[in-house]
Length: 314
Image 1 (cartoon, helix red, strand yellow):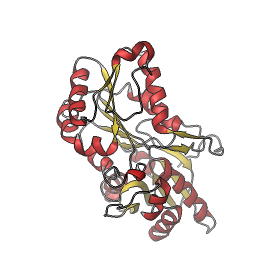
Image 2 (cartoon, helix red, strand yellow):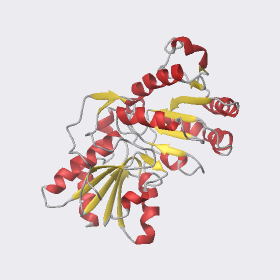
Image 3 (tube, helix red, strand yellow):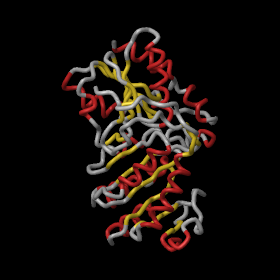
Image 4 (cartoon, one colour):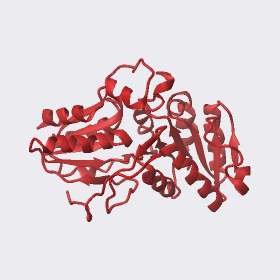
């Protein structure tokens, strides 16, 4: 793996991915008359946020499946709909409409799903979303992105404007710190190399998993293990070229261990016989309400767990 052209700098201030999305979408709507926003009564937007573009904002209420059908119709008419809802509802309640109305038709609908993973932890298991990457990455033509900080959210939204087909963007709820800056900005379909290493490659997606992978790399370095860290913000299409030199891999994600990023990486590397360990949530519901990071720890998603998984594949 080639190193970034410039050395990383410390992480910046904490920002909310969903609020960054809101602000970026307001700008996109003012810049491009094709962009429309469909909301599901989440409270993130109001009709006055968009100024002169307010007529292109519609709150359809708690009717997520219907909202996907409306978005498909608008996209068929030449518009670019951004659908705003919670991840648990986008990937389960509305999934048939996503499959048939949007993915099957190959339409340029941007489903922006907030409160993903355990970030809606205070609302309990009904609002936890640990299945969406597995669901969405199976649909042909669907691009699946998991920005890890505010800069990546803005970048993914702007790049997504050029996609001819559907896009699923997975966001959390609260503010999380910015990642170290690298010379290579986030690019859809291309993993970001945050740290070089030759012994093991830590492949992560999402705000906390990427930070936990970086922290695990520090733990391993103290033991003489040289770990690379990849921010795999695009789960589909997966950047398999970034994994070409990997000798052993650990995936890290805020998702059930099966079907998500870890599944995608294992599928890609199986023909080469590369050892892959997957760090995620066990095959069980996190049957508790509580703060986000507390629930991650309860689910076994920690830097120490990532470092232990790395030891297991070496």
